[in-house]
Image (cartoon, rainbow, N blue to C red):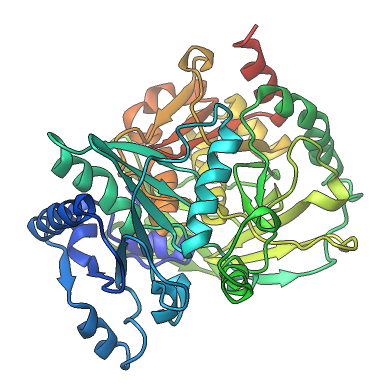
Length: 487
């Protein structure tokens, strides 16, 4: 599909991101935290886990060696810390970490998964986040007699086998969760133009209306979980609360799912091989997969077995801010605009109301990957399917993208929707891998079903052990379809 250089130019992420489980395992380094009290069950579990990790090519380093590599007092950045058992305040793994955004800590407890008891999904997630907060870890494993459960800060709750199948579950699930973990994006990671977005601008008003009119419908669907507030969580001390707050970029807590609207984008028609050679004056784009011309970015996109040169336009997406109540959206308070232009991400916000902090979604890269993928498909459509409804939506009214933690009933997926992602490694949102899988999978419709591109209406991107991203004409229409499946 797209070349590594093209991905780097489009999304601003490195082209050498490990995408397969063997590649992830080969780059993974872990260490066992020594300052714990372990039960016999945990001793046996961690020993088995170590054996499987080593067999998969993971480097297991002595804790003292990671300290030496990190300067003597802190664990070297990039090493995953496995902390099994009970720990003392003042001697937690986080006390040996310089930057939580570049070091993942996995807690391992001899206890039932606290998500098993509540019936409501919101309560399940609240219980998990409380366990993560108490020990300041990003992933926690709950080990029982006959199973173990992987839980992450983005809401994944994954039961795994303890006897037969243990090694397979470590390989297929655990590796991805620690090699591509959740990392909360910080506002400082992007360009921010505060107060630069007018919610009354003519090009914005119709999209705001869709958000506000769909919000009560999304509440009825029950798929949009609200928010786990840090104010409700117990921490060992104010010091650890401050660490968690800094890690979350002063967010008020953990939020789940997003709603977004891609603004209309003027896409240029794709160029075939001969036209592209004449336009660029060379055929280097076919080998490199990417080219720049007159300050514009172009990439090689396959259509069937033929390469096309497609211009990558700037894309803009209006999206819910991290932590807002998606069941009661107020456009002047809860929405922000993100733009991707040749690898640079810019956020624009309305003038902030008192008490409102605009923080980027955990899924920022994935949202923008979907948006640019829609634009690339529309560019091809201008040549091979100029009457396609999806093309008209992209250029005239924009399209919607919604994400929730759960599934999308396959009976509700109409003809023309491309479903993909089921076989991808279960990486977390916010990762480079998640953005890659979103864009790569979306574009496969150009290779797998080029003859049906006229009927292409959107797609359903499945993120294993996480949720779904659904591209639909409107947020209101998508919510109504979900509700129709429950009548």
